[in-house]
Length: 201
Picture 1 (cartoon, one colour):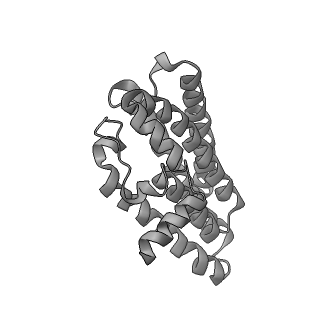
Picture 2 (picture 1 turned 90 degrees about the horizontal axis):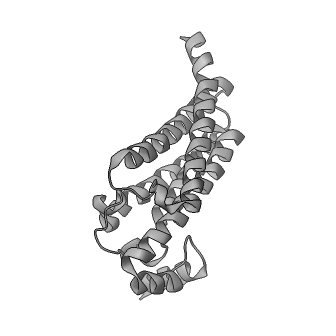
């Protein structure tokens, strides 16, 4: 078993690197050549390929982080006191976002522009919280490379977003353009001001 995990540990890291490189290249090419139709795509080989490669990256990152704990030991309790709540709260918010966005929109259907709920604070709240969850995982694992993978995840999301914004502007026109002007792409002071107003009334 130890020998198997010793092989699996670097393999998971390389799988994350290769899948991120491939997905990033495809997303960048789609930005340059929109007719490629790689993202967003609600069906077809583009849809299957994009989500497939992305899931390989995410799964490999999680596996690598867990194997970092196995390889280097449990470490200091403070890692878990900080990292575990951050991971679970951030990932919980990511899942909660499906309530606002809906599964159809999540999987690239044009099921109506969502600007309410958590999407009133950020145009891409689930992307923000997914990156934070990965940061939390890196803290838990005490793994600098997992934190690098969190940065890679952010870059991939940024490429997703650039493609999505062009698609949304084409599909929703002025409504989306106005939404872009009033709501941050990620998080800024407007996000916290709106949150404070909603909480304090």
